[in-house]
Structure formats: structure tokens, C-alpha cells
Image (cartoon, rainbow, N blue to C red; front, top):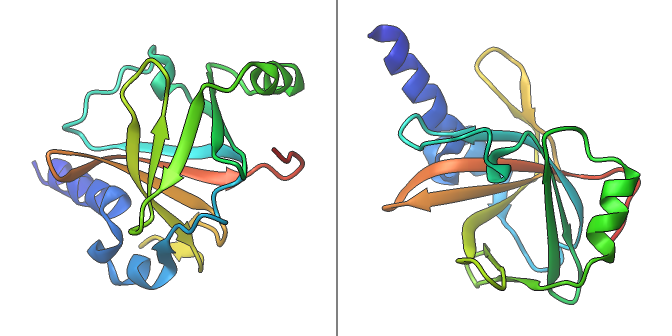
Length: 167
């Protein structure tokens, strides 16, 4: 019982909005339009225990890449194995049917042609975040996308810019 409570608190700190912890409040800021363009790899995906995650579904695959262009287009690739140059090139050579936008609060909307839009709180890490065991959990420049359901955070993707690729 105690272990479950500790795990629940740890997740709440990991996926809660910036106001949840003092360190995150000081280290995060809402995304601005010039933060988003680029090639981003998902480096961490966390979900609350109440959120059903099926790792066999592409939406939850371990390896994910986003490509956001400055003119508002987006590609998103998920894979069960690391994404190599051939997969990246195939993704970026397909016609773009997805658009992204930010609202005045910094919330990111990714509009897919034949699916419901993905809306998430978008935040940029300005200073490294260290957990209670002194492990670095987020680095400056990374982007956090937090998804909500019924007003509560349920899933967070942590994205880092790909070091060698540009959109």
C-alpha cells in the first residue's frame, strides 16, 4: 500500500503541470512559436497509473520522432526499434497532412487530417531538473508535452532536439 502511494506521488510530480513542484515551476516556461520547429526525439514517455497504455499501439511505442516545420507542418513517426536514416527520410518525404499551432498559453495542437487533434501543454525546460535522488531528469532546451483528460495530467512526452537533423 505504501509503495503504491509513493509511486503515485512520483508520477504526479513527473506529469503534473509546472505549478506542481517548485523546481519545475522555476525550470519550465510555456512554449513559444519559435521553440517548436525542429526535429525532436521522444526521450521519455510517462503515463499515470489511471491511464491505459498498450505498448503494442504505435502511439505508445518507445521510439518516436516529431518534425515540426517553421511554416506549421508536422510529421510524427513511431517505431518499435530505433529510428534510422531510412525511416526518417521516408517519413519526411511523404506528403504532409498534419499541421501544428500554439495558442496564447503555449498549448500545442497537432491537427491530423483523419484523426482527432492532439492537444497538450507545451513547456520548455530552461534549467536542468534533478529528482529527489539527484538524477537529472530534464535538460535545458528539452520540450515537455503533457496530455490531460478530465482536467488532470495523464501522460507526458519529453522531447530532445535531434543533434544532427533539421526539418
